[in-house]
Image (cartoon, rainbow, N blue to C red):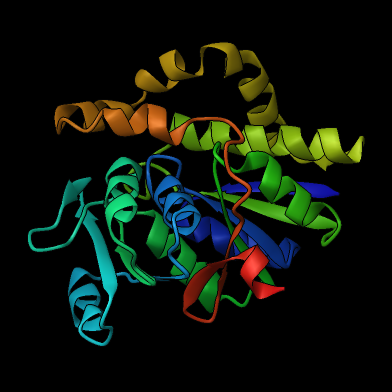
Length: 246
């Protein structure tokens, strides 16, 4: 398998030229929020680019949860921000069939990937790295990994390391892999950092931003390794767990 890695929404154009399959990573926190929601009874997640689209869409459903943030901060009148911890707490008390989500980087990348016509669009992170690798291993001869980045335009250490975690799982499963240089670098970085992952990520600007707004609890929640078998797959205009699509 050939593994490519690119950054930000514009990187999707390059990936589309070289593969039909892409993994979207926004480790802090969109990917973790999506995995957590599907883990806790949400059947369908609808990504939107604009906050106002989220509010309008919610009116169409009798039981929908609106998760929305701008610059990491919960949007006023949204049910919850982009927080896997808060999502888990809410869903432990009340069931929602649908979640609508708007984030600063991840949902924009998902929507763009869908518009470009990838055959497979998967959402990955530390939580489901092994599950994502298993899902892709027998489906593709090449795969692209798109790191959404901090605010969708700056390097994010957590996205790079999450990519490396997935590359590492692919190595373990397949025995042989042909990663291009950025993908290989992410794998080597993760191998170096995995025993002190929280300390490394806490030095990054995404983690510092979460600490600024008092939501540092989401950092540890978002970087737990291989705790979920959920593989979020985006198609048309929604995201579902791969197991629900069989």
